[in-house]
Figure 1 (tube, rainbow, N blue to C red):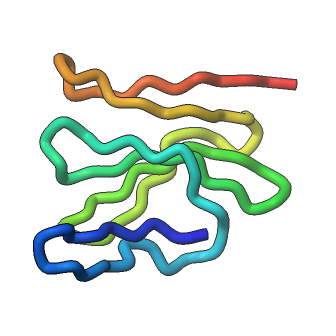
Figure 2: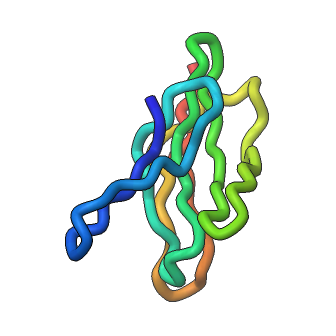
Length: 86
């Protein structure tokens, strides 16, 4: 599953990610330049951040952790992660 955005004015879409893995639970940064999301490849689930201007993905958590539900703090310009270890 990839991340895409839709322009409601021009009625066009743009795919932001092209790599393997499912991207879920997306959250936009307050500045609009980043998306943070849960990235799952079937055996691990990590949190990743995508710079929408450059397309660079950065893994924010280790593969040994099970992390879900990332969200941005609108005041601190930081993200929060719910970590559920089994």
